[in-house]
Amino acid sequence: MMVTKQQREAPPLPEGRLKKPLWREYGEALFIALILALVIRAFVVQAFSIPSGSMLDTLQIGDYLLVNKFSYGIRNPLTNKVWFPIGTPQRGDVVVFIFPQDPTKDYIKRVIAIPGDKVQIINKKVYINDKLTETPQAVFKDQTLLSARESPKDNMGPIVVPPDSFFVMGDNRDHSYDSRFWGFVPLDALRGKAFIIYFSWAGKNSQPLYQALAEGVKGLLQHYSWDSRSFRLRWDRIGKIIH
Picture (cartoon, rainbow, N blue to C red):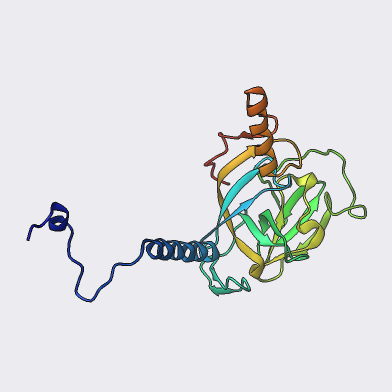
């Protein structure tokens, strides 16, 4: 009996073993990849986007960033409670957390004070434990000073940060809704520490990404020129480490 070249090169299947259908092989690979992605998202790294300007100029509207969920401990993915503590936020960390007044929303701010710290704000200046604390990333775009009776934005305190809680503020100090207004962030509300911008785009105000992309393509088809007013990449921000 003649043996073809293909028969000589193809290794025989083990006795009693059947070859899996192609659809099953791909299906199993996709299932494993999905499980790994869910595990990574739940315990290691999660992606977030910036919808507001409260962290300008550090973070801009249209920035997409990665958050290290491992920084402050391994957490229950359903309740966000800490299973195994690893570290705690330090002053200056940029953190993502569950908004205490609305658990359906995630906020991003900078940690200003940690448990036990005394916080006081006098004419926009922040004092931690009676010492002036300046944040290099902080910006002030409104020179008007409001009294503590009018608003806690420019004058408040002194207050002491309770155990397992943190006082946070946005870098855009005059346009940030933060701990000055609604209080402290509990440890169990933390999602993780923001560490890198992996994508960033700019366009018209209030436009979602898909709509901005569609208008850019429309300009390309109709005028043979990409509509950069609707959508453009911020190449200089992609890969930027968050401090």
